[in-house]
Image 1 (cartoon, rainbow over the protein chains, first blue to last red):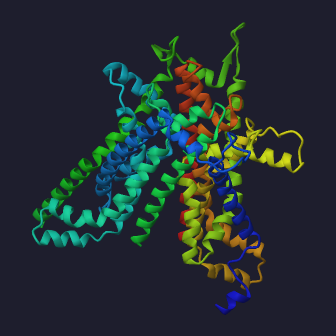
Image 2: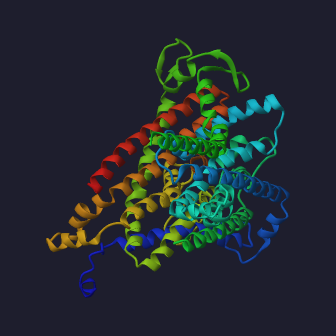
Length: 268
Length: 307
């Protein structure tokens, strides 16, 4: 310790400066975005005074409300489906000896992370347009299915990590006490697994809420989510209303991620 | 004994079967709504385009030919498809540069985080993760507001008297590069951090004891120990930027297309679904090659480190 004060072996000159500049640059655009949401003028670059008018404007914008509501509904459904499927998949792929097909399962579950989003989008556009023609159904089901699919790997990650830390002997103990497999799962495994499942649900929800590309291709007419609505608006002249919407959106994401962080910190 | 073995084998088989059953909902959803439809794209890339989008069910290799070659309307000769090639080239170049910038800036940043005390480290890490989880579109939009002609940077420079006219930054390759480097920066820092966290600093100390300079220690001790992180981070940035769609669309505009936008064009105005399908498959092939190179590299450096 005394040595470290004289000569810090961890130090690399210039690195802290570069790091701090990077952190500054990382937050500068977001900060500017948030600040101009409170601008009383209609410019997103010239400050004219503090006002909440753009938040009010966004709140009164029928399209924004409708798109937000749709986003929330899709994200909720997709996150629950993805988390349920991911929990089962995690139970199926952990705490076991290697068996044939185990690696294939891993690979397949993680595949949505590898394939470029645009390629999946195109595939879904083609595939779903066929199904839409054949069945006549054009509801939100397609979007929910697509979102659930790309959320599964994200939900799977924390649940699997949690399961791998869980002590198998507790379940054997339950079995020794004549618990049925279902009871052992319900009263022993599930409570132990809970923080992982919760973290997975949060991640899946945020990932679904953020998606632009796949939604843009899969949605039928009049099915804008908040991100695709914003993408459409970016082509036009932008007012601070966009900043106001973004600010609220940011707050929600940051809130969820903070909860996620606290939950996942508790387990260590 | 043989009997007991038989029972054990059967219960193991039952276990494997129930594991397949448990995994089936996840596998089914992914097959139905993510990976399975890729097979349809493959089939579509060999069909004839319909007049108003979609396809006619007739075999045609034209889409694949026109990915790389273009047919002259007058004398029917084939030549290299310059427009496509320049878009491929832009995608590769911009993705590579994005990766390089993210690495050069991400390395010191990750190192900085990894050398903090355990408590403050978590806060810095949290600060890196926050932008990663916030909407990609919003972050791109934030960059747009900074660099537009009437944007914050140009306004500031004009006010300071540095420039008379606004600098055109939007709708250039520079804008795309800036946006992608900004958006994908956290994806580089996180894996770098993960491998730096494990560095045994006694090795660094040994280097100094042997009179190595800071640069030599960095070059010959720290960088080699961080190699898995460098490779993982590079692949995590390179692959999504190669297929980027939102950032080039918002910041690059209609003229500075990347592969993602070229693909989209075929399903919109272009109305050439087979070509779009063939281009998608091309992009997928490039990504798969990159992933295979990664797996090779990762296996080699991983073995090296543990050996």
